[in-house]
Image (tube, rainbow, N blue to C red; front, top):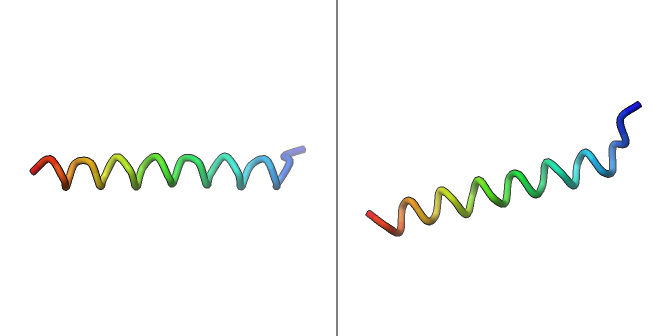
Length: 29
């Protein structure tokens, strides 16, 4: 059984990292 709370927290962290990575890519252009 998947713990929804933990899962959504994980997804949130992944999103934050992806957004930061994207922003860094845009900044370095």
